[in-house]
Length: 586
Image (cartoon, rainbow, N blue to C red; front, side):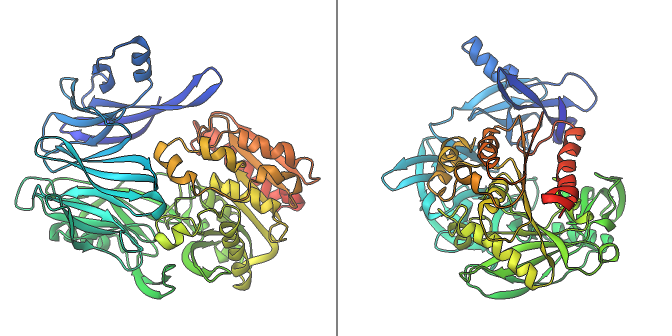
């Protein structure tokens, strides 16, 4: 197995997540495990081995599963709360013992705990005459569940518990009810009423709230809010935490510059101050905030981890990618452009270093994200795709096309039923904008995407609009009829998106492609099975265009088992744009 992550859960105890390939007959995927380990050595304890099973098949299934920490119970020296197959267990990390404290209800999607570690809320899905819904349920004084809110997915209304206050009757919820962008709002459990809006942003979605859970004078106080800005951002409330963040900013020399952001819901533009260059994240702190681990970098710099002591003494711990030279990765900027129907499309534009590649225009790659209920951020992308492309002299445009989530309901809902249609128009309109701005070099534009982005690259190949010289489709989906039932491995996402997936199925018209295309797909991909690429390729090869197809062993839906396989994937992209793309490269 390979280690994926490590976190302290108790004094002297760390939780280690690890993963490995998993085969069962012809089925190939990956599986993971969570272990509890003493920092001084000893066994790697799998909490699932403490759970009683009723049959050998149940024991075998449990052996392939992994526990998930839902509450580290910071004020309990020995126990954590784990989710196992939906059920909740209290696990003693020192004695390696567990007890089930809650059996999962039918169609339960998740639970939330209060400041004492009690399970107080849950989310549950279902269908009725109005369609798929998500409920927010709270436990009453007798321990029984009561439904408080019901939101229908088709309405894109969100109502989810973010935290609890020290008042047992007050929860803090993320809700976009009656507004385009989610806010953090008080919810009175006793009266079932929404109260004061605690945090909202005029341009971005609020995503969460952190409540100080360390005993003392600040216990139960709101420490900070989070929101989806151009990247995930923190708005600090607790003065001690704000002082720490200010000290870190000064130590790292971080400064803000103005950025123009246009709201897709209103078309209104505002200038905001933003950390456009280097930015930082606090990874972990001591309880007294005197010691912290920090990451600092930029969208074009993989950065470094730092150890902060006494709030002022900062030393480098490690660099994730020490051999990458940030000077070769250009600069990323946030931009807005208008789609043909007037909808504002947010986008991230990365241009190559002009000292190496001149002032432009540049060969340009349009890179739509996956999902499509997802979004890009102005962060360093560990996929390495933007870094690879811009280091070779290509400009990269990442449109946040309609159907993208995280930018408000108007943009999100505008993509319903528009796969390969208006969603694709937004990408094409990005090409036209980049040409008009003198960024893109005429006749030297390509599309590369992965997952939904791979689907969009297939559609770009069958659209006879002459905008693209070639396309690369990574792990794309090609048949919308089959995707509705098989694409999404998350039951909620499968049902939530099913009714919105409608439009062009590129596999059915692949014989009409008008540009060369290269496809690649992982043999361990169980999110978008490799058959989607095979269906497209089988038909596209009768088009007369150059069609290349590459299978990657031990590669899943973006996760590569070895650095060799990751390199192989990047080399396919690099070589195709360098010498392929219909000949002579992009």
